[in-house]
Image 1 (tube, rainbow, N blue to C red):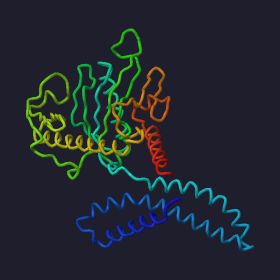
Image 2: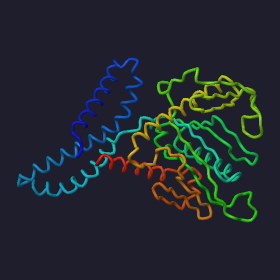
Image 3: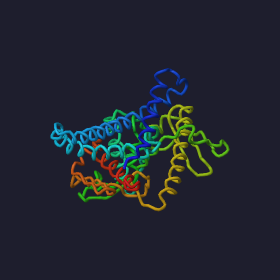
Image 4: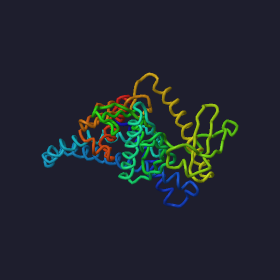
Length: 351
């Protein structure tokens, strides 16, 4: 059953926001109210469609008592009732509790795992896959830090992705990505298995995390070493150590001022993610729900190049379209992961 009281509360809130923005009394709160209004609008549209359908069914059922209208009502009711079931499901999904971070930009971190040079090359392939996916979504993709191997692979990369609903989609990518293929460096044609780890973190806002200046140590240094697109172009790398957690962040853009900004933002985001993980683990201590949870030690996906196959192990989804996936065609995978997460939430809520 759908709670009528909650539906009315949502509609009342939406109408209040609409009036507040229309009469110009929102003042300095206009941005926050506008954001809430935009988030509520599709929910209210779904709820309104459901209420209209309920009203139509009630009218048709009332017509059954009228001999002249009975035949028409009997013809309409089966279709209306079948629509009601789908509409109820849509409302249940619309009313599911939302992750407050879903609308935020995200930090994407990719690092090679087991597999040596091949793992680094695969990490680079994943980076390009996400760049193409972001481009297709109309998102902004900005590499904040990148360190490369001599073969053109990735030692580590941190990127910021901004746009509509970034974290809501990208959060399902956190975990271990395994690849099975013949490496370019392999002369014998043998299939190797290697891996890369992906972490997707919702970007922290200033109100989320307050860092005590006494807890951090900031060092400015000359970047050195082989490889990396920034390493040989700057003398102003910034390294920040957060002593309570041991988290170390390095940024080596050309501008020292910009480096400090980037490093502090990345540090805040990692600390915010730690707090989210702590809260999530307390919440889910009695259940095992991995999808979107950020268990980054979990093998979530296998990319098998000889068979052209991609398998997502969390939802037992296998696609034989690996070429398109590596070109950034992740829509079907992410939609399936979102649907599975929604179904799990519905089940937990007794829906």
